[in-house]
Length: 68
Length: 479
Image (cartoon, rainbow over all chains, first blue to last red; front, side):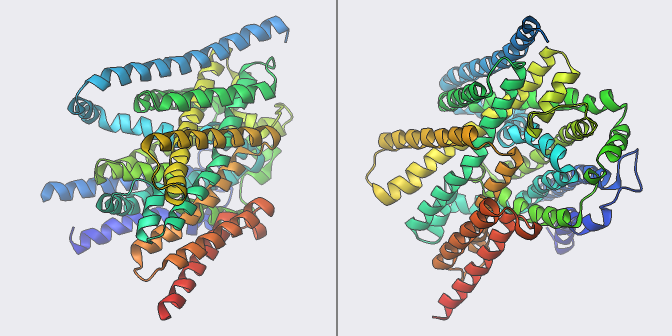
């Protein structure tokens, strides 16, 4: 993987950990989304988002393997 | 409820649970007999054909346990939004697994490690360190096994509709775990775990997800009720926020320090299997959301005075009992029991093997034969199971408390693994003294005074452990 590819790879791996930093900011009830308090809604979405991030990492590696 | 009706409902629910366990054991026995005669190739071809699904269900059944079904929902009833930290650390651990565990796998492959204690023993050239990590790993597995016994006991107690004494329920739970552990050495555990994973997913995404909708009309309606009856459950207080952050950091690192999980990494066929496992499990983690929603539903009904609970950990199974007919209670009970049995058996096997191989053989009897080690492993396995049963009877604790206590302990292996793979100047004494300091800190900050200043005990231990390991290594290096 070239340097730009590596940077993107590690950036995608790092983004999920932003949740820990963002937690004090999202720790609130409003705005509610679909009637769900903000903290709960973002946490649920984030859990799905992390899985998608890992899936993207997997595809990036598979693409690289294929190219090699 | 008349005793005849209760007896009929208990027979239905318990019949389904026992029927399911019998079915999985029979399928496992059939597969082990069938594949014993088949060539390794046919096994692997089947593995390639069904690879991802088998891997997904099997790993899911291994990692997700009674805490997933009963602990998460019970914790939501007791502490509300704090449960979100538990949900998130698991998910963050899979990113770490994706990046870090391949390095661990490569080291294992290069040096022939089979267990985490092998790594400590050979990396730091110290049998004592290998034995100490084996003993610590086995000791901190006890609360994790205890929570499985408690969990199965709660399911049997509820599915018995009040006709089975809670003490007898725990004994039945212990008997089931013992049977499953013994069978584990004889039958195809992978196939059993596939079935267990399938029933767990089915019960979560069909039965559990409908509960908030059936009681409150929508998930929004659930949170509206919860905000009215227990507003403090919706967000985190400042103290809870500190706890959540410290728990997410320490436990996401500690997630891959469980001896049975490290063994799983070392024994993987190649590095892609390890990565695929992390990817598959991260999708399994999403299944915890419906269970947390059942916990929030139970909290809303509990604080409204509608739902009565013997103990908060009964929340999910009691919600199913009041919402659905007995046969559905049997199905979800099967899912919860399946989750507990597969995890407890894996932990018991690993703990017994670690103690016999890395502690008994290395320190006491290097000449021990293979047969002798198997016998010793069985004795250790039985001893650990009996201690866990004793604690489940005399000192039952909140399931998530037990889980996090186990995590706090095994997280103390992390500095040895991380520093040992990234810093060439780390010394044996640095890791040894750091580990001892970390474990003492965990005993003080988790077991004696739980989470002082609102910071998770495992985080206190990890911080002290890293600090001591680095200072001792630098001082030794200067000498």
